[in-house]
Length: 389
Image (cartoon, rainbow, N blue to C red):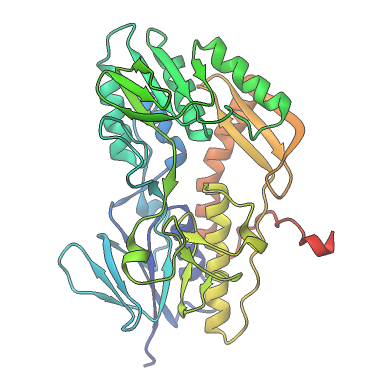
C-alpha cells in the first residue's frame, strides 16, 4: 500500500479550515493524502464576532470544530511551538512527539502586536480576551469611562457595540489618525454620525502612550480618565515563523511568493493573516476574514497543483465590500474596488446591519460548502496589474 502524503496545517481559523476542507475533500487526492490540523483550542472561533461577545450582545463566538471541518481531516488540540523545516517536523508545546509532514500550511493567524499593548489594557485577540473584557464591562458603575484605543474597523465596532449595549457608560474612541478615514466621504460621515448618536466621544490624531486601571496617558502629556481601556491598535503575527528560522517580515509574517509557497522551503505554504505575499499580488490585502478565506482556498489549490507536478497559479484576490457593524441596530456597508479603495455607494442604518449579519453567517456557509464539495468556494479576483490597465 502506498504511503499517504502528510499535510499538516498550523491554525484552524478562516484560512486553515477552508484549506483543510478543500484538501481533505478533494476526490483526486482523498486516497493519497492525510490532513492534520493543529489548533490550540477545540472550537472554531468567529473572530468577526468577538466585539459582540465583549459587549455581552452574544454569549459565544465558538462553533464546534467538527461541524465545520471535513471528516477526513484530523484535529490535534495543541500549540505549535517550533517548526523544523530541515527535518520537516512541527514540535508541539503539549509534550507529545513532533508531527512529521511532507507539506506544511502555515495559517497561524494574527495576534496583538507584542510590546504595543500596555499592561493595564484589555485586548480583543481571542475568545478569552473577549470574555475577560465582558466581565470587566459588566461590573462598571454607571458613568464609568470605557476608552477604546485604535479606530480601525475593530475599534469602531467595539465602541459602537458597547455604547449601544451600555448607554449608562461613557465610551471614548481614540485614534492616532482620522476615524474611519479609509472610507468614502459619505461612509465616514455615516459612521461618525452613528457614533455621535450613540454618545461615543471621539478623539482623533492622538497617540496613547500608556494606561492603568483609572486613566490613559496621551503623547501630549494629558492624563484622561479611563476605568476600562480596550486596545485595538495594531495586530501582528505570532513569533512562530521567526523563531523557527523561516523568512519573515518586520511583523513576523511568513514570506511567501505569488503562489503562497515559501521559496526557501517549497514544501511550506502560507495563508491568512500570518503571511506576507509580494506587493504585486497582495499589496492591497489587509488582515481580515475577507482575505483569509480566499488565501486558504488558493493555498490548498497551490498544494494540490504541486502534488500533481503542476506549476501553482499566481494569487489573485480582490474585495467588493467593507462591512461595519455599528451596534445591533445599525451598520455600514461600503462598496470598494478590487484593490479595497472606496467607491461612492454606501448602505447605512438597519439595512446595512442586516447585510452585515448575513455576510457574517455566509462566512460559515462558505466553509461548510467547501466541506460538502471541495472546490465550491470562489472569490473576487484581484486588481489588474498596472501594466494591464
